Image (cartoon, rainbow, N blue to C red):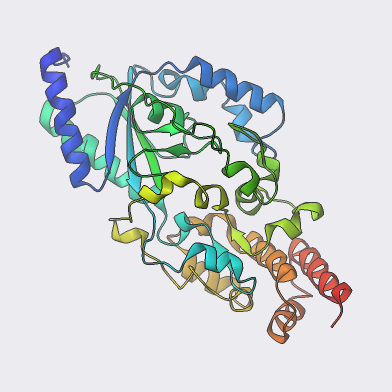
Length: 357
């Protein structure tokens, strides 16, 4: 296909933005593919061992900064943003302050965002192909080795904050990112400038001190990593700090002043399912493997599986107030079929017994 003229490409970009909004995206920008500084930052992060058990991060280390290796012919990255803040959910801080309730990261309360964004981006690309004819592209949503926040910054969607999340001046940080790698030489947008200033509220807000310096996160201490990506036993020294967070952690975003501009999710798939915005810990720990499969199918939570889900809840129960319901829930699974779960249950029971009646 002969690439459209420059004037046509500029008009095409505006059409894409309008179509993206119709598909539920809050913003779309275009970035160049070179991110050398971010790639060097990634290599330094990997060399420090901050990726923990995420071995795939090192396996794809150099490719992450070179999208043309992932999709040959790529010259631009289309970066899109979709808001997910569940405005109708129980107050996040109130749930965190009630140790008998389970805290689930606000992004995971609804359906799996990977599927929602991937389908919407694929539809956007298909609409473009119908308009101009076949062109080269690849849709990426989180799981592909792409430095998505760097490209989103260069596409003008926001800046990378000191907690390493992307922040938009008009929407805070409660949004998902997705990309279309393409061979269309669309005009690029101006990169977003940073506006954290002297604010460092996110750093002391981290329960496990995982933000070791501005813009530097040790994933091995991060609760999101520990409850989602970490497959083995959660380090004993970090369990108490996890509190009642059973899937992910939002503390660094909850204190960010830019999130006063956050927009509630427009997509219906991000609405709360199964009461996960403020569920009781004993109730969730009582789910069978079958109930977990049935209720979490179609959710991002489904990916961690029943064993890690149970491991996480056992830790939260160990941090909860000692009640008859808490102790009964733990004792009911003291002989669980998983040694990983049994070990965390033993820790939780011992913690309560050491605290006394």
